[in-house]
Length: 292
Image 1 (cartoon, rainbow, N blue to C red):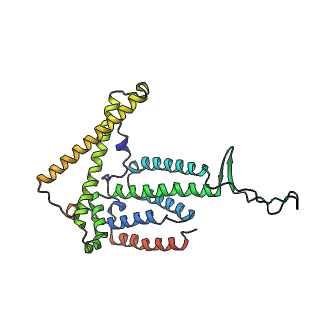
Image 2: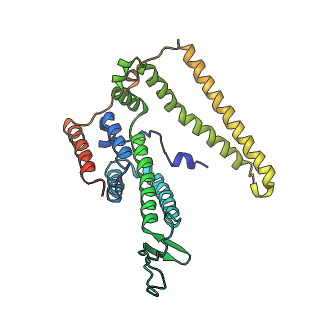
């Protein structure tokens, strides 16, 4: 019943040092924005290139294989399933035969529209529009989730919030309390593992009692799901109240996210410079060749 811990999605896992962990958090956050924004209105070649680049980056990141191969497999199956479903659903209306002349004038002279079908599996057919739709859906789902997961997996929450507040520092001129917002975001990121732990404990308690939903029936099963959800919400609210009490007991002082950063081994200057140089080059390539 520890499958939630075996698939670390969206949380930092400490481990041996590698170049991706030592990379500047601001660069990792900027690259995640590239993977999130450049697929918008991009062609299939660019979307597939981003997926291949993410796979190559994951393999060469130096992160332990046990940290990413399970989540990568689950995400790949999910993206393929959504892509296949989008492919087999009709994306456009079927082409209709257009009679350019009356049948009496030229008998049998009916000009039909071009055949857009790519594959046929009995009653199911895949045309060009549905093929592009499935490709766009699957690649976008994979790129968005895996790029964010890779950043969260290799970056401590303190460094991530510090990088975000550094990038949004100009908003201070507009009167926005970036220090307070960064502190609240850091608390939210720290609270996510607690919510995951509460869900894990509830699932473990159900497994320990050998609950069989098929024997309970629909009504009893639905009541059990509601009871578990109510208990999960109550436990999460209790954890939140305990965290608020602990914060108030320490004076309720709001600190800058940089105060929580721990000294870690940073990447070499040439590595940060190389990654920073590749960032505008990728944006230029997207503008020049991303539409195809």
